Length: 190
Image 1 (cartoon, rainbow, N blue to C red):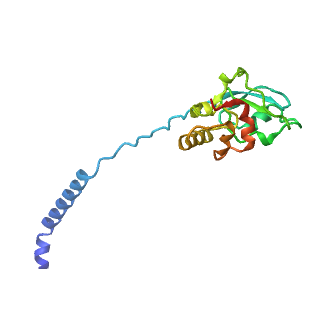
Image 2: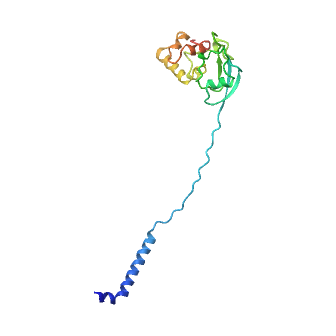
């Protein structure tokens, strides 16, 4: 057998060489084509411009006036902008955590003050908020009444019927004497 290999040695090497070149060519042809790498630059994100609200702070504050606050600000920040509450201020009757809205009037009553003045432009019963017919949005115009309390008033009114007197609004969960004193002069039952 060694003799046969020696005689055909050149042919065997030739066949092996052809097989090796053919296999290499097939591997080269079947290889996946390279994909171009695409670099995607991140798009610049726009920074939203903060919305400014104008609120009128009056009553027992150091410097009453119109102040510009950022959207999402609270009554506490509005009072700070007005120089803070005076020593006569009854802060128990002011919801310092309430969010302010554009064109809000924030009145800080003095200790012992019975009824806070009506907001400017409100001088007759026709300008009062009728708590039996007011929409949620209209109820939110009352100081100390935000979206949640306004919705509670509407739901209470729908479940229990119309209010017979303004004092009955204190039956609504979340409205205590402090809030009631803030809105007493601003509402009616029609």
